[in-house]
Length: 322
Image (cartoon, rainbow, N blue to C red; front, side, top):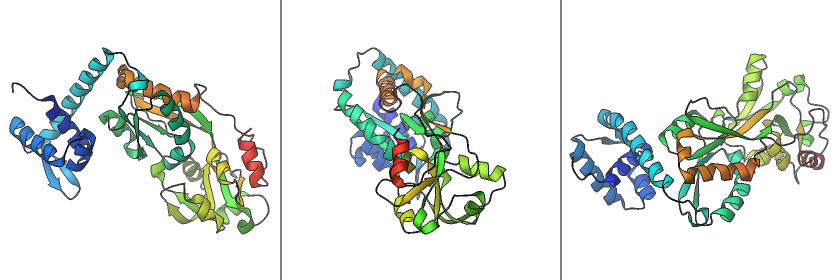
């Protein structure tokens, strides 16, 4: 086991995390044959196949599953040690950071974040990964992403959290198609709804409805919020979504905002990252930059009063920008 190449260990960790020779090669900036050659050397070194090719990708063997946590932690510790001994300068940082976001996060937060990162570190790269909330803690623990932004609190002991802003859920609909008058609970239950799948992490309103026995008719289920303006524009469907983005959807459209006819608590949108990774200067800078760009360290944004009436798209947008 003399003269072990650390690049082999990095190849092993990335191949385990991506399950793909192609994606591993892309992350390492090498060719696929180079990754295949490294895998052959790893198999010889550990005297095990380590990965088996399946339809789903490169499936790790039992031996690989046992090796992964130790090799991952060792590489992370080595990287943190090297980084901590160097001076970190954002202006010359050429590192690629990976951030997991929902499509709502991409629309509402990404432009502001990109402006800030470009000003501070013009050579740095940002890769946005579609957030799958059920895998969020696993991704952070495995180092598959540097950080993620979501509204569902993550409870892992090794996860650090900072609140970026506060928001609440409202209903968005085309008033002309839906009909005039307030959105009562009776009209809400009788109406047709469009629902966004729970993988986005926005399931609080659904949980409240289940607890209170409120059953609605879901006529359409979609994976992303971003298509809602077009869907609602030509239908009488109702969508539940966060106020801040709903307000932007009303601009220049016939869509209007209504308060939910039942109480759902406000929620926090927070940045999450692996606490141990904070020892890395570049990781610490990345998280601090997100907080500065989006939350400005304040932890909340001003929300219109719940009693506010939303008679028109113009008023909805104006209230949300107060």
